[in-house]
Image 1: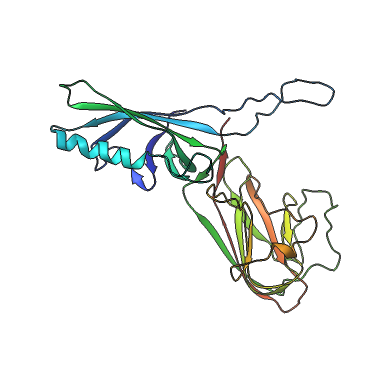
Image 2: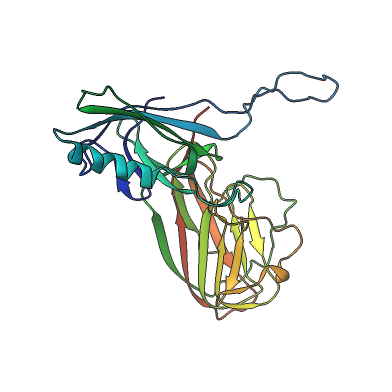
Amino acid sequence: MIIKDIVYKDVDLSAGNAYNILINDSNKTANLRTSITNKENFHGSRSTNTLGSGRLFIISGQVFGATFAERQIGVDKLNDLIKPEGLPWLTKRGFYWLKFKDWNNNEFKVQAKVYSQCEFTHDVNWAIINFRFELYSNNYKYLGVTDKSTVESISGATAPTFGVSLETELPFSFDETPWEVINITNSWNFLADCSVSIVGELENPTIQNLTNGSNYSLTYTSTSLIVDNRIDQNTTNKLIVTDGWVDKKIYRDAGSTSVRLNPWLNQIVVFGDNTDADLQVTISRNDTYSWS
């Protein structure tokens, strides 16, 4: 797939940039891992679903300018921008947002790090310098560039008297519910991670997506709870659960995982044990897409 209008580390490399850099070929590779896996009783069979894995972004182009000084502007910028960070074994270092468009002008972003440094080639008497570099993303899904947030006020956020257990057949939906339902849309084709912020006192808080059954609940009284499972390749924390910036994962209820959003409509509910809860709930996410 060809991509365009590249921005890396917040440096705009799209056409007309300030560095005399022209990108004329940019592609992403297919998954770097094959879809071969083992099925029960069928050793070595090919999986019907492609396994998610990382991929390379291969980018090449030209630095131009009438004088050596003009060309050196682009060379210096690329050398500064496309350089490895951290020692080789520090695999969680050096990931930055790579933003781009496809040829339908859909905008995406993914975290990527330098895989190969910039290579320059040119003829001695030629006023154009060719370059090529590679970035590596170890994630197989891509996020919409637009950060989306939905804010809702909830009063009396108590659990229903009839209860809903994790054994309930899912997905399910109904027109009337004792909860205040927050409708959230993930406009693309893949499960989206999200952050849920709950401001207000809530005893034994529970966050649940009624559409797919994903949930997170804790046994304690929260006042400013944040449950966030969004991507950050530079840390080892794939799920952040804090209250007043203090880690609260120790209070996690058995069976809790994290809340994820199906493609398209999701019904999210937040509730606890106190009947007088007045809450402000903010759900932040990016539409999420996956290419094979």
